[in-house]
Length: 282
Image 1 (tube, rainbow, N blue to C red):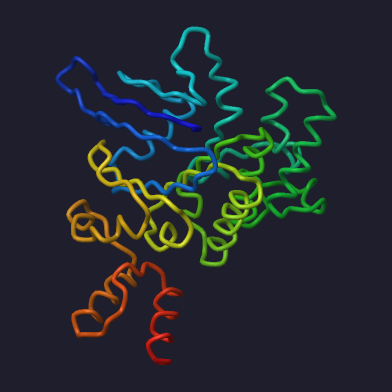
Image 2 (image 1 turned 90 degrees about the horizontal axis):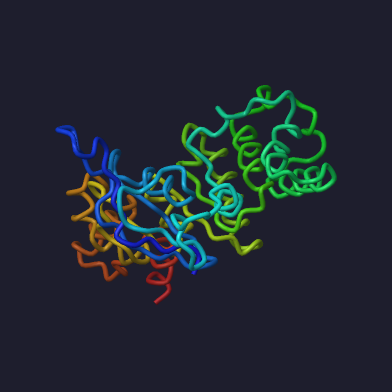
């Protein structure tokens, strides 16, 4: 078990006339090595929730346990927690500030008080994981493409060697090629490094394709929790929350309504293609 959230509440303006729940009685467990998608409309509480998971925000009530220990227990080191639970914000390239790529990636491990040799080793490994070779090390991060900047920002978090990686809309603002590159990178980190990944996204197609579990937030509460196929069966409920299923889900439903016996749980174009080809071969 990596993270356990117990009856978590976060209230803005508590005990004032402006009191508003950002999170309301949220409970969930994220196991080691899971690849979890987190979706919800704007203001649903998904980003607020992720910022609690590494202690950037403190709950009004409730508890969060990391590897069995409450992060709110007396003497607990939030600095150490953040080295284990890495958070990549939306548009993380806005946080780049050093004169070159290598220095930027070194910043996090340097703050851990590590030796110079260990800092540089971690930075090289992180850049290698994100597909940036030595030709990028001395380049200014501000001269890179959008996708490359995003990779540098992710490398800066990976250099902390987190066990859990949280990404808040990591493909926002990128072109299709950049989106594929970043999501492919995240998938490889999960598969090859065994990293626990929490992906916040507005793209139903992306979560359908990559994650194994999907959590839906609505008005600060956990509304649905299951595999993508299980969650997208409730596409009408999702629509009522201001969301939707992947576009292929609606195509599949239209085919079924016309009497074509295609599996209703198809959530990706590749699955639809394979199902249709299989029917043609019968």
